[in-house]
Image (cartoon, rainbow, N blue to C red; front, side, top):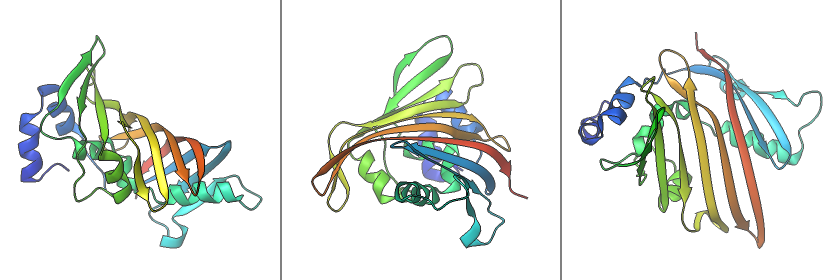
Length: 215
């Protein structure tokens, strides 16, 4: 976590509250968790167990007793693309450049804004979002830890062939995890996209619960 010389250099340029929050973060290597997502009126809940064999690490716990619908299968497929390490709020720090701006503060939090910057760890779709996005990160004055943030695009982009995203807005919250880490416990994405001549407005609500350190 943040151990490279590059990140050490970037850390040194950040304001003290952001730097202290970053230095407090940890990313345990293996966790089990329950992950639920809702979109277009459908809901799927899965359990991830890193101790299981690869093809059984993701288990659908809702709905049960019937086959998944096409929309539910699509949600499950998207959930399985989740990399467990990406649930840790420490990964949000990887895209913060050396220069950040104090956006606002009150009695409970400090908010910094920045232009997110992809790196070698960033997947192609997220990198496409970052290209024209602005972001912010919130730090608690009480706990001095990351408590959430937001990333939104200002213009349309194409994350995949024949797909155009006209707007993207994600808000997330961070909460206590395991082994001293904070987790992205909730996030909601509002996406306006067009594909094959059809436009869809997608609201995807994701929650993380039942987090345990893997044995």
